[in-house]
Image (tube, rainbow, N blue to C red; front, top):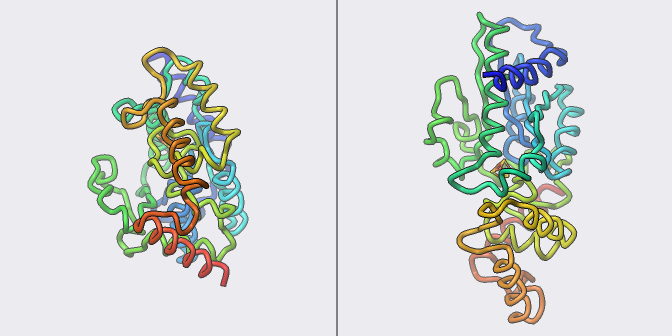
Length: 283
Ligand code: SF4
């Protein structure tokens, strides 16, 4: 109970310090923004459509890619709307020392994020009691199966990209129109999760291993300090096993296996789609 009160204070303090500008009557629109392509496209669409009383909210536990933070700053400049940034009372690096790597069935990081957001949500609802508060979540049409999840199917949740059938590719196009390209991150990675998220897919792990040796070194260090039983595990692979796998793949294929022409048909197709997308953005 004591802890809840302290957290509540953290959440509300940030809200109080934030300069609200809900001049117009009517409902309040909270945009949940991660700094990735989908939520950024949602923010831009909301701004283009002239949606009123908009408050973009971002949660940063400390493991965000710098390009995600940069995208939010850029979006603030484009739209003229200030984003409310939320931080946990203990950053992920600190919690990691006792909790170790998040697992699919124990995502303490997601729980921290959810709880922090809930405090702010409650605060806003309380402060603007007589107004309808709608949350907008940027889930692209390709990922519409996520919309069946309990937390998303709540009342007063809006999924504008799913409603308008906006795909991930279209999101990149929308963002590209405003000069957002995340330093071509999406050319090689699928999703912009936390940089060390253990739940990323194997392709993103591989890309991290090959293209960001400094970050991989950090993962090694983190794995060393993670408590016993909470070491890095990805689909039954430990960190060592992942490294072995990637090294073997690199060795077997002579050069870095993800070079064009060395990809499997599926990966080739995906890469082609991305290239097309980027060239459309550049036009
Ligand atoms: S992206 Fe991964 S590490 Fe980051 S909060 Fe979500 S589950 Fe946790």
